Image (cartoon, rainbow, N blue to C red):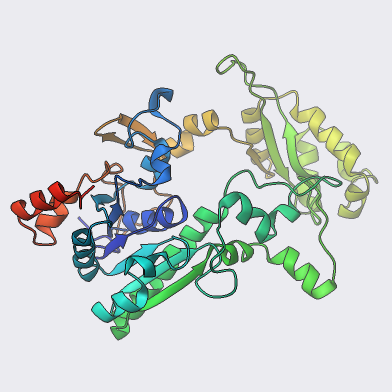
Length: 414
């Protein structure tokens, strides 16, 4: 079996909710041993969030949300109201390569696990803090949640239809985006340490990670002094460009009719001609109203009516297959049933279906890359809260069974 890219790397994971766990999920996918430090007295909020298996809420181990983003990790339960629990954490930190957290600023310092303290104890440690606004600057103490981070990044100002107010992006995009950036930064720091022996502190801002993806709007203001207009699904440079109605799903789900849509984007005049031919409208390719990008933009309302007239008589699969065969960029506006049943995802073995101790075999999203030399896979489902406490304390940290029992009696392992 090939050695995984991060085999031998251990992560002491103090993070919770989404950004931090998503960062350490990528490290676990790559072979790192990720040990989540949790507590039964204040469990991660994602252990209490739906979806629930069979739509039935239950214990702290049944959340589909938590179980998705913590695959392949271990869990140790420590109650830091007890000094003995802090000693356990210190032993874990000293035996780790990376410490991760996404608490508010100063929390790790107040717990006694700030970077200066852990660097003094283990000089080659790498610590990453994925804070909402970073660990420096006047906003460092600001609270940050996805519903406020999305608008604050500038993304909402670009999202919505003309004449509408700014719109949310649909989910808390800054969290997983920061997680991906964080995993990349940790790997770069590990590479640096391998060359120099030096550890370092990674001060990451979820806000800045999201702004980093919005350069067009920011540049338009900084270079031209103007704010980009909200234009819905349209694009300043391409036409047609948008989401077009298809036939509804034939069967209802939970007695609800499910509408279906197809996304179409034509980058230039040749792609438009291919689309026109695929729709059986060869005449449109040379029509003066639509032949060039400039003319299509002038007549975009009429153009979208024509495209919708074609897509609305077809299933989304038929529309996608027809347009892709013609060389037109088209894709389903996929709902979750569509993704669940997609043959390409099945063929690539994207889905993970492992037997979880409490919820059994449930489908989860897997690893979105394939490495020929070091193939990665999700080996274990997400951990139960504190599932690996005894294993870690005896096998890694050197505690005896008697010592563990005493700590448990005191409540230090709650």
